[in-house]
Amino acid sequence: MSERIKTEDIIWKLADLYQEIDDPNIEEDLKNLRFMADEFSKKYRSRIINLGPKSLYEAVCELENIGQLLGKIESFAFLNYSTQSQDAKAGAFLQKIYEVESEIKRDILFFDLEWANLDDRTAEDLLQSHEIKRYKHYLKTIRRYKPHQLSEIEEKLLAEKEPSGISSWVRLFDNILSQKSFGKRKRTEEEVLADLYSPSREKRRKASDELTAGLSEYLHILTHIFNTILSESMIMDRLRIYPEWISSRNLSNEVDEKMLAALKDAVKSRYDIPIRYYRLKKKLLGYKRLFDYDRYAPLPFSAKRDMPWEECREAVIKAFGDFSNEIKDVASMFFDKKWIHAPVMAGKVGGAFAHPCIPHIHPYVLVNYTGNIRDIQTVAHELGHGVHQYLAGSKQGYINSGTPLPMAETASVFGEMLVFQSQLKEAPCKEEEISLLCSKLESIFATVFRQISMYEFEDAVHNERRGKGELSKERINELWIKTNKEMFGDSVHLTKNYAIWWSYIPHFIHSPGYVYAYAFGELLTLALYKKYEEEKREFVPKYIKLLSSGGKDSPENLLSPFGINLDDPHFWLDGLTIIDGMLIKLEELYHFSIMK
Image (cartoon, rainbow, N blue to C red; front, side):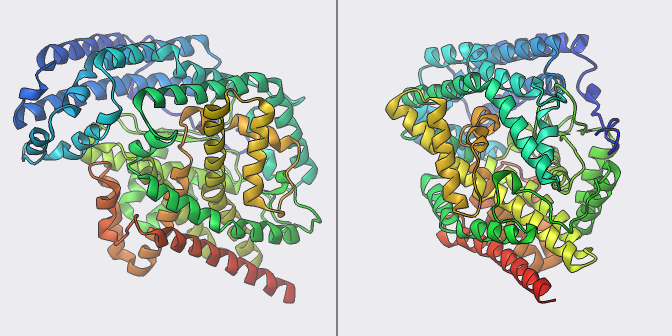
């Protein structure tokens, strides 16, 4: 596959971080890191209460330096491992760095505890001072965790045990799926999943069987891993007095329960949109019944050829450049300077991601590029992240560059929209326009409706685990099918195979509660893109400023220049109306083609 679509040489250059895991600079940096953490502890422990604005600013700067050096080493270990998870040395090195991270966090966590426990009056006076304006939002965010913090001894114990805790189960999950081969041809997960986009129904059905058979071999282990994650979440929430399983995620996302409920209820109220679409797709394919493995089938008149990597690059860069030369220039660096890893290969983790690394280096992007139209959108998605991370890092530094997940997903989805609109304008005929609209709607459904369906599944399994104890694989299957049927209605027939497909989704393991951020980001992006269509060039500098702001302020404040109010329940419905409008356009094109 890599030879056919010319990705075999699209390998990132991790030497921008370190040469190799035996690079002597790593040991030197680890030595410096421990020294910096030790000096920070000696200088500030038990003294935060007495710090003035200037000293508090200096303390945060020192914390930022520690975090940045740790982030550099962690980034290299993670990225190195992500393309060779079968390599014992890469795995051992990653585990070593996880253990170092645990030590460092143990030694400096006193700062967060002491700052959060400062009385409100003293803290507010410091927050209003000019000296710490740069870190005001960061410091305010730490204080929001005060009701959920434990004593320093307890926090140290939790930090100490982390390398042998959840991170080990996450690594086991990644090891199983990245090293598992599927079917008689011993293919990777990504290669099998790519067949679900094949024009051949028999090939799609076979891919479904191969994926299910492969997952079934390890289902007892994957079920145990999932139950362990559910149990850990339950225990930690009890210790930290979080009222719901999703509360800690909402806190880190800077989203309140009312906002999440409004988003979730709005999306569920429009499940009619995907149901209508899949009924229409069944007609477009000429099927009597649409099975789950038919959902991503290309239309009979869709372009059949794979798109080589260079054509993908040109399509993405052109779309970004039509929007902004600055965005195009940043995105081009990922291609030109070897910041991307693209080929499908054994031992490489599945899916795609953009990793921010640290501002003094640059982000890296990983994709598993198979050459279909969906993968072009994936490249645009991850480059949207990468551009966001690059701009935020270069403008805000290490601490303020990180953004809450819902805001982070905005830039990625906007990147997809730019490429889609560019492709739509160049569509040579009505059939191609129909094909592109179908592809985009399926992408939006995966980002909005499917993610909320997956959130509902997570909500069900977390709550049932807390009320009834460990869940069997059969019960997890039942909850998965139930929440998916609510979204699909009678438009898609869910096969027996589909019942276990929850088991390969990494978000449930890596980041419980993550998934609703996609729906948040998609609907927010639709609102932003509508603003762009209304304002054209005036919109661009405001958007670049939004990306460059990183996480220096709350989502509400960052979005205020666009006139967007996230507390307005009608906001989410407006975004869903835009999706409905795209479907109406598709329905009209279909009826036009029938009449023709």
